[in-house]
Image 1 (cartoon, rainbow, N blue to C red):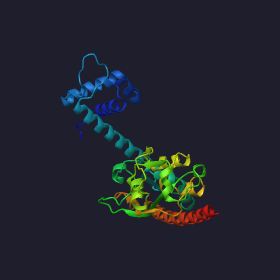
Image 2 (cartoon, rainbow, N blue to C red):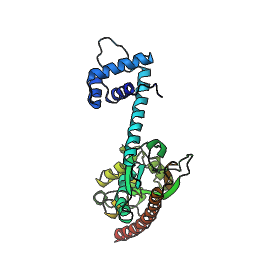
Image 3 (cartoon, rainbow, N blue to C red):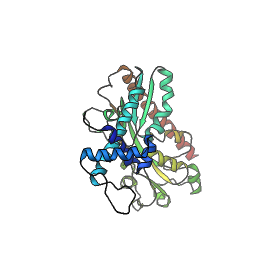
Image 4 (spheres, one colour):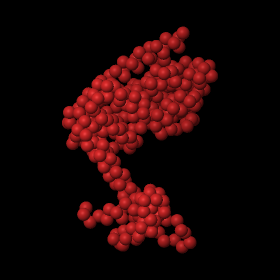
Length: 314
């Protein structure tokens, strides 16, 4: 490790990220000539060309080796940056860092944090968001919260809560389309698709139908949060994760047109504790709080669904 030219690799990572020497210089806060010199020095040190030489072409073109090393260098620099940030933020004995997906952070975790502060005012929580499925060790977090099937890891995950999936749509669109309430009416509704395999319309069709439902139509979005936002704006009907749709159902920006018909996914959210820091008392306190919040959320959803069914019948 002592022989690695980290300064040169940092320059390569910046060029790979920005696509050019001048923007890389701006990113690093140095002259573009210094970036060029770093790349030449790195090629000399490696004794491998990192860029292809093409007559008449001014744009940089990575060689296969250069692209592979640039990608690896950028990933390593980002991981190092995250670890440094976590170390700075985690300097307090009462700090806990939670890594999770943007959708879970926005739709479930963030609104609940004030309750943690009320009961444990000395605890300081930092949230890292990333779509990638990384372990707490890779992110430097104390806890990682994952959505989906039980992850296979060396560390045993703690089941946080189960999940149920069901169609949702905006009240305005529901009224506009004649208040659809029968599953067969899905044939005439605009579908929104999440890339999450747990919330696919194909899975819904196999269990509930209708058989002629065309699951190819409709836009595909990359996160549960985007799906719910699109549904709230009246762009179509979405298959929602109930846990993430709690607030939207409670404030009536979304409704369940088909009542309590739903796919039961079983345990679908998991807490993964970092083996190096997860035994700290403050981390264990946050785990216990998360579990209590999950139980509270389950009871609130049951009440909301009951009220919604009464409103629809009325």
